[in-house]
Image (cartoon, rainbow, N blue to C red; front, side, top):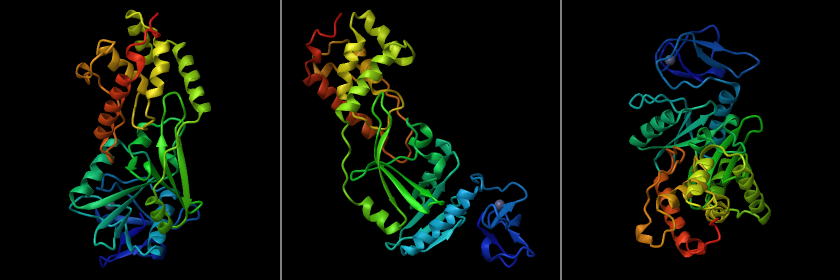
Amino acid sequence: MLVGQQINGKLIGAAVADVTKKYYCPVCHQRLILKKGNLRIAHFAHSTVCILKYGEPETREHLTGKLQLQQKFAFAGYKGQLEQYLPELQQRPDLLLKMTNGKTLAIEYQCAPLTVQQLYQRTQGYRKNGIRCWWILGENHWLKKKITQQEAQFMMWHPSLGFYLVYYFPKRQHFCLLYQIQQADFLNVSYLKFITNDVKKLQIFMRTVTKPVTLSVRLRTMQRRNFEKACCFYRGSLFVEQLAWYEKKINFRLLGLELLEFSLDLPIFAEKQIVWQSRLLRLNDWPVTEIDSFQNNTEILTYQLPLIKNNNFVSSCLKRFKMKILQSNLLKSSKINF
Ligand SMILES: [Zn+2]
């Protein structure tokens, strides 16, 4: 913690606190230990456990980061309070900003892992009380080759930016915005990057219209190759589809190559799109000849995305898939039969 309470009840920053004096937690009112060392910046620590459930481990990155974020937002004209406890919510955002329009914005600088339930509860808590919340991520949440639930859950969406994540790196003192995040089957995650040390510049950029990158011919070729390789492993949900189609006397490898053309590259699916697409076709008693008979009779596994209206994306994705299937020759063609 960076803010403690003095014996007279007033709040004080750890940087200006005096080691010879006593300080208390503004939430649970227990004694705090003032730590001033070389490794981490000055901060307060509990000697016992705080009643506040969501205490994040106070790593150097988290402590330095939230202090720097306060300074950066102040520089952009947003006065903010560090670690202000909101008793009615029982939450303590890292930074609470009063916006020019009178609204309140909570900044959560998330460096440690967080369960999706915690993320949901905290976001809901703010929402119910009319507070907007902005999740800024630390280094540990950097996107790897494949998206996982741990990163996906922080994903936000805007028509100008597509799917995006905001990071802050205290060592380099800059923000990094990953936008137009896409995940195509059998390929690494792809995104565009914007780096700035200035909150205003970040705000301006986030209002600029950007375009998603379309996959290059080279990547599409790689995707097809990776799919064909995966078919040889006879594993997992892909193998389930292979077997099921085999029983229908249809070559799944050839069908799959056709289906890859229909993928939308959205980073919301927890399983490969080709798998739910294949399942959907199968359960509709292939070949589907009429749109009316094409039912949504399959469960589509997506990540839990509390900051996004996930269902809208899934239903528009399904709609587009159906349209494409019905427009394509795939239904009539016999080229995927054995
Ligand atoms: Zn406490």
